[in-house]
Image (cartoon, rainbow, N blue to C red; front, side, top):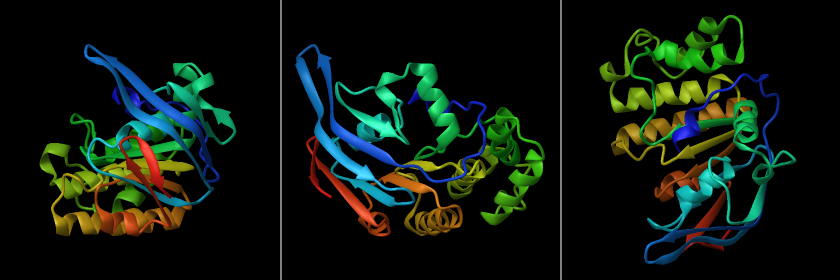
Length: 237
C-alpha cells in the first residue's frame, strides 16, 4: 500500500460512492508455485452503506481492500467504483479516482512525522487547491477532541490521538468512500472503543460510504452489512 497515501488535486466529493465487485480473483506466483489469495468474489455496496469485511488472518481481507481501492489490480474480475472500472485505468487514472472519491484510515495511522497534527490534516486540502484550509482542518480536529493538540507532532501524541488525527485527515475532504483497515488494531480496548464511536459519528455526519476490514466482531456488528471471507472466498454476506 505504498501509494495509498497519494493525494491528488480533486474537487470536493458531494455524494457517497457505490462499488460493484464481479468475479474478483487474485493469484501470485511464488517459488513454490501459484498462491490463490482471492477467488470469484462478488458483491455490491450501495451508496451510503456501512460494510465490514471480516475473516481469519490470511483470509484475503487486506488484499480485497487493496483491490477495492485500486491500490492493486486483480488477476480476474473487476471492481467498478461509481461507474469507472478500476482495472481498465492506468496507475495515474486509479490515483485520480482515489483522489476524487476515496479516503483512508489505517492501523498504523500513516501520519507524516515532520508535520504537526493540523498540518497533516491540512495537507490533502492544500494539494486539492482548497482555500481556507487551516480553518477546515482546525474545525474537524476540534470535532475529534484535539483542539489542544493542533501544533503537536505525531511523536508527541498517543496512539489514540494519532488515530484521531488520521480520522480527521480522512474526513476533512468529505470523501464519497472511506476505507478503514483495522482502524483499532494498534489501540487498547478503551481507546479503540472511543475511536469506533468517533468513526461512526463522522460517518453519519458526512454520509460517506464506509468499508472497513476488521477482526473485531464488535466493530463489525456496528456496520449494516458483513462480508465474511474464508480462504479467499466470500462465504457469507
